[in-house]
Image 1 (cartoon, helix red, strand yellow):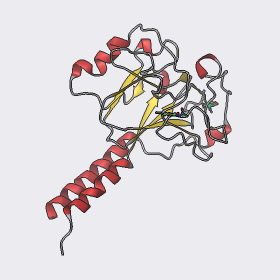
Image 2 (cartoon, helix red, strand yellow):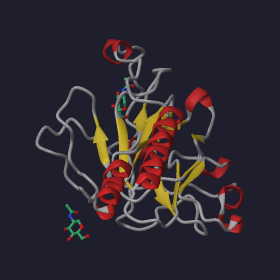
Image 3 (cartoon, protein in one colour):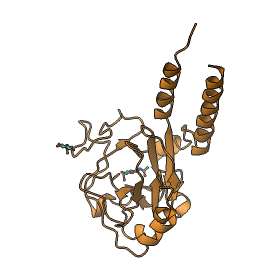
Image 4 (cartoon, helix red, strand yellow):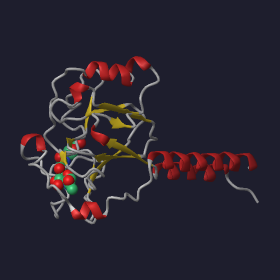
Length: 229
Ligand SMILES: *[C@@H]1O[C@H](CO)[C@@H](O)[C@H](O)[C@H]1NC(C)=O
Ligand SMILES: *[C@@H]1O[C@H](CO)[C@@H](O)[C@H](O)[C@H]1NC(C)=O
């Protein structure tokens, strides 16, 4: 009996594609993304989880920080929340290639205080996080205007499916996408409490560390599997 090596290898992308990396936005009141850099394989998902008070995530460029990369680049829309456990609604993007993805918080002033991050940072540190933060310092923040390039994941609702593509119009339910109206799309002040979110405050999704360990163990498993072939 002979296992095809390629059929085993074919399983690896499926495993990797299932990987979700969670990045917290403004957790603990800090103007940071955490982790601020992350290696995510092609096909992997990055889920942004928003903490008080008002934040968003927009794709930018290393050498032109704090403004949208292009008319098509992703933007989460403004997230306003007072829930210390973070807004239960998240925004996720799919990594389409292995190029660095530079991003920033498009809430006025935040990017200019260094609130930026990189998915798949280059090995060349001259284009790494420290340099990106330095570039961003004191830059005016230019807001995006269209929620696009990712998926707004509202708990309890049928998943809104802008998928990896652009989406100018919300799905038929409409409620899944945050309104882009108002100053920068952050809406009016959020309700003081939200029982719905409080009830689901304990997130069931794994922490990045847990995911890292799981993926790491899987990789080890595959490595051993490879030795046996
Ligand atoms: C989550 O963010 C959306 C978009 O800003 C907002 O409409 C909603 O009220 C927020 N939820 C909570 C519980 O803060
Ligand atoms: C999405 O982008 C494609 C090109 O990338 C364009 O042809 C299409 O009209 C866009 N759709 C929306 C809804 O913006």
